[in-house]
Image (cartoon, rainbow, N blue to C red; front, side):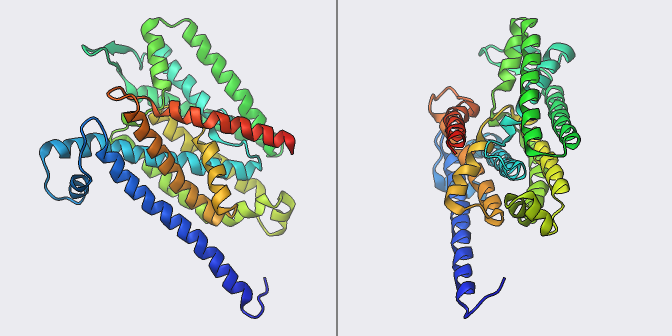
Length: 356
């Protein structure tokens, strides 16, 4: 690239400055909404008290218990899960060069649901027991979580294996994901048909995506997966930009397209599987957020990826907070709100693609 008269560098600085400002604003807004989300609930806590408790100052024991044991891990789980699903969606859409590419469209979520159903029916890890308050609890959540994770990774492995046989084409990956979704759904329905009332309730309960089921230990595992994978995606942003220009152009620029595509697909699938395995199915975040961010910040992955991470966390945090409050004292699973939001966008993208 050649610059003349200092004009282009100045324009480029303004370009970078605008993107940086938007990303910084999203980060500040996320912090503000985190404090707000912790303060809202059946037992209201003043923002000042929340800030003092998080800063390590002494507040009432009751407030400390609510903040540190209930609301903070749930809010952080929403942020981390939203970030993971969003960055996975960005990378999948780029390497597949398909606006409909997302975790929910590639069979990962449905494979996890089948894994949970298999755990309940075959392994006995999800037998439910009612308490005096008519609540239900999975007796062995770790077995159910692990089984869901295994089936999610198997689905990703099948997608990558078929893509290798077909030359790693985006169409092969998407069509394989559609087939896996149908297969996993059929398997889940088969198990549900033979389930008794308690087992059926267990399977349905698990599939509800809910951030409140994440304790500090689960949050730590999800975060440990999200941070290094997200950093890898950021480091490869130039490669994704090149792939957006076409495979031949990317190869001409020295990008090893097949390796970048396969590695990105595997890591995005693994990241999605970790979130789904611990929190249940939270659909459409990975599909909607990249398109929202792309309209504001553009398609340059150097800025699109970090912005999607922040906006994904922000969107799921807001959705989770609304889900806690909209039917209070009852808590609505956050996956219900994301489905209501994502399904119309999914239909819109299909219609727009047909018109083009």
